[in-house]
Image (cartoon, rainbow, N blue to C red):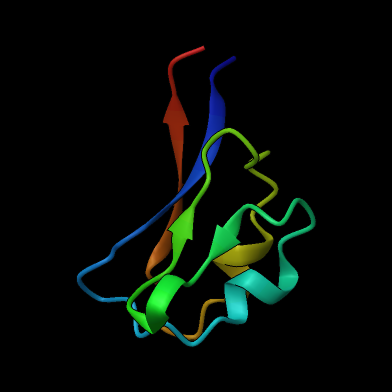
Length: 65
């Protein structure tokens, strides 16, 4: 079964920080207020950021194991 990781569409992200606040692994940062960045090593694919994103631009995508 492939693992899933969060991916953010950086072109559409408005850097609101909602995703960052709900991430249980602190895998999301909004450096310089430009757009969210997800640390793929810390992301566990829980999907909390996907549900919280008001712009619906974060998705869970399958990764290679």
